[in-house]
Amino acid sequence: MKGRLSQLDGIRGLAILLVMLHNESSMFPSLHLQDVFANGWMGVDLFFVLSGFLITGILLDTKDSENYFRNFYARRCLRIWPLYYSVIVLMFFIVPAINTASARMVFEKSSPWWAFPVFLQTFLVSVPTQAAGPLGVTWSLAIEEQFYLLWPLVVHAFSKNQLRRLAICVICLSPWLRLLLLSYGVDLYSNTFSRLDGLMAGALIATLIRSPNFAPSRFIKRAWILFFIALSLAFLLEAANARWIVFSLSAIASACLVFLSLCSGNRLLLRVLRNRFIVYTGQISYGLYLLHKLPFDSAKAFHIDSYPLVMAPILFAACYGVAAISWKLLEMPFLKLKKFFDSKSEGMHYPDGRLVVAESIQ
Image (cartoon, rainbow, N blue to C red):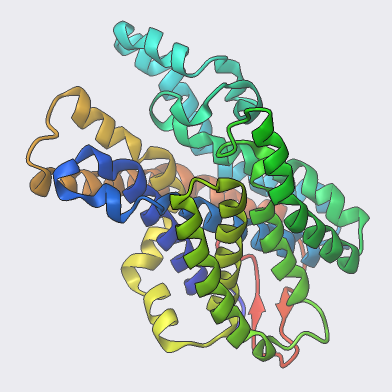
């Protein structure tokens, strides 16, 4: 099999639903969804792990190809930049021009504004998660863009075994680095150096399954056990406000889920991840992630957030509508240009030859 793996779209769909429900459930306190999805922010770690897995796989599979760097960076720009810079223009130019009263708020909450176009908000904005509107979620995109910039150089310079050892080192050292950062009063949630273990957990999976002696069946039972233990401990320690280790546990649970979605063959898991709604959600997840605050913020601005049982479904449907329009009219035309930056690769093969992963949902 070669091409798109629907369960990976399903992983994205699951991740974005968790994030959206976490971010917006507090708008309707009478529904008590904020308690149910208090840990929905962990969906971001699922995104990080999946990104580390797919990007590392792409880089490994195209490492010896012609125009390795040009093709990778061009394809990343075509995927990320059109919608991202549209949001930048909307928030820093269009919104202030339409409503001058909101201009001051936008620039005060998102200062310095020029950090956003260069993906440096995780370093220069004091609390990037509190930036105005959709800018408040761009911190994770900044981390991924920083990863995209540097990781191709690392993959090109190091062997697969060296990459595996590097990933393990980063995963093991990350909790202690977070403890150090915490002692200096650093906000761990949106700090680039606090979220490296998720990316590296994905990279580790990508290197492992490309090893000639790797047998996925040997690790499936262990992955299930580790998934439930890590997730349970993450919930427990999050209640104790110990995020320096919670991020590690969330990354481990996310990595197990990605691995199991690829290798376990579990019918229930695959049925959930291949559900048409979940898969479609994953396909438009980038637009949902960047744009989901717009309908909810608009409802607050116009004071139409009463009657939660009616408004909550309407606003979530509006999120899907906006993301679908973005997908069709903005993202897809640019994605079609990726064909000019193709790299020949053999993809990823399991030792028994039963699976080949091309670029999948990237």
